[in-house]
Amino acid sequence: MPVQWFPGHMARARRLVQENLKLVDVVIELLDARIPASSRNPIIEEIAARKPHLVVLNKEDLADPHLTRMWLQWFSARGLPALAVDSARKKDLVEVPVQVKRLAENKIASLVARGRRPPPPRCMVVGIPNVGKSSFINALAGSRVTRTGNRPGVTRGPQWIRLAGEVELLDTPGVLWPKFEDPRVGLKLAATGAIKEEVFDVEEVAAWLVEWLRQSSPASLKKRYGLEELPSRGYEVLELIGARRGLVGRGGRVDLYRASIHLLKEFRDGCLGRFTLDAPPG
Ligand SMILES: Nc1nc2c(ncn2[C@@H]2O[C@H](COP(=O)(O)OP(=O)(O)OP(=O)(O)O)[C@@H](O)[C@H]2O)c(=O)[nH]1
Ligand SMILES: [Mg+2]
Image (cartoon, rainbow, N blue to C red; front, side):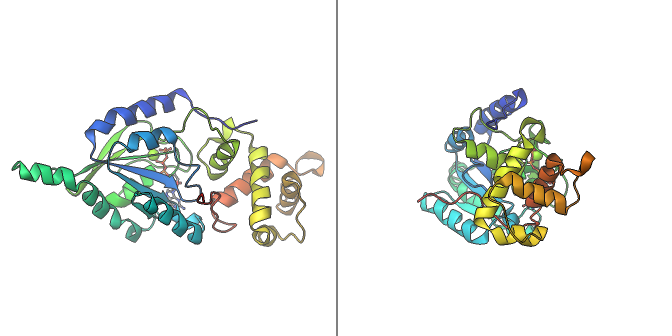
């Protein structure tokens, strides 16, 4: 069953991003460093291209550092300034206002040339659900000015935040798009937490992720769950994980749903290691 999630509130959020574009000088596109390609919303990408545009790979702490460096090079080779950050680490964010001001330079210069005092640059922070937009803004502001949560769909409406006269930021609700052309994009978005669990088959996504891990880093799966051998089918690996963790139901059989939830949570929390599911093209 392909993963898909584009409810009415997301269509409204997409309109909100479109409507607010004219009010802002810079668009900050937050991507998930674990899936820099799959977390790029093609609709947002098109909207953002009309303004000076900064790419931020968030949750850098959960991604493979080598692949993050490659992705940063990939973006800059395409003329897109890009930074990698962990929104819980303040020092990662010092470069953000610097880049924003640089991107807003032309506008500031034209206001100064007309004898006007330029207001702080205005930025809209956009990205998929749960990528960390509100956390990123709170970290920049140095306090909890906007609500966050470890599930998609926390921010429901737009919210302006001013950073000590330096920059103004607009927090927006997470937006996906109506159809994932490649079904693997849906699986990766579900595995990393951008899609709410009620709308996808948790066991299917966990089995896919386990197969990916078995191929990319079998040692981390074996070590985390004390397994000597890994069966080739994802569901069989999940059975072993469930048995190891005592996630059994009635009759002593492994509860595959609970094993799947457990694996997804451990992956998202970084317990298995730092992984990037998308490699830069070419
Ligand atoms: N490890 C890690 N977790 C992060 C980072 N940034 C945010 N998070 C976590 O990701 C979850 C989602 O954060 P939010 O800031 O609410 O995400 P959002 O993009 O505003 O989500 P919506 O408003 O639902 O679209 C929270 O549990 C945060 O603590 C980061 O850089 N690293
Ligand atoms: Mg939010």
